[in-house]
Image (cartoon, rainbow, N blue to C red; front, side, top):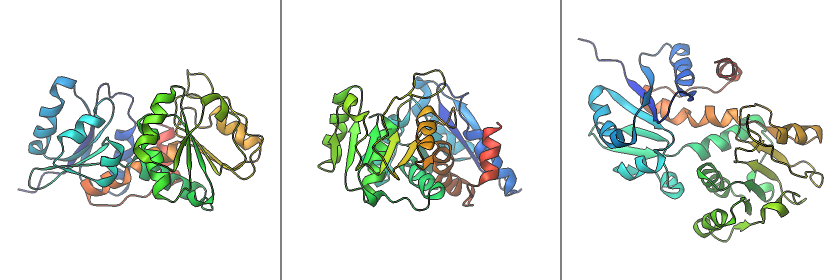
Length: 276
């Protein structure tokens, strides 16, 4: 009897909005690999039990989305350094011995997206300004510092959340007042929006980019693909990177772990996901 095909999926509540099944399904079809990737709508009371039962059902691992990223980290027997630093997991691998390995690939996806879309970009070229202080911001600040950013300027509408991140990441993080940060300082080399401002149905992120020259501007929002922030930056002649690539690149390590093939992020994949 042949071995059953590997299974993976994404756990959340709700889960219908996730594009991960389309993304991983595309890779499975493209590479002709056996296996399935499925959405798993799991209620909070059942999450811990589900995480322990899934390996027995043939699952090699899962992605984890809201509201379970912190809980998944707490349930894991082994945690990657970056997941521990960020305090949340988005990628789970079930080991042969039954143990749960937790990782966070959001920062990896963010950096790979910038490298692919703007090959001349370097975190070392100057300070980064990050709008927002949620889970995505935590992963991105961690990744920028790991890549050698000399300073991360962090701003959030609720200043105390930004102060909490500064306390965690140390002297290279400087908290800026939300209103002051909207006039982006000339020395900033990378601008990152990690908030939902500019997303369909939300107000725009209104900033003054007039002092900038050559600064890369990126937004982790990808609905719309070109947010008002990116449109403004593009009109000013600044290099821009949209948020879709972060979603695509963060999925690479998990797919490789579960299905044994390192997938490519290319224009065909982007077109597939945008058309989904």
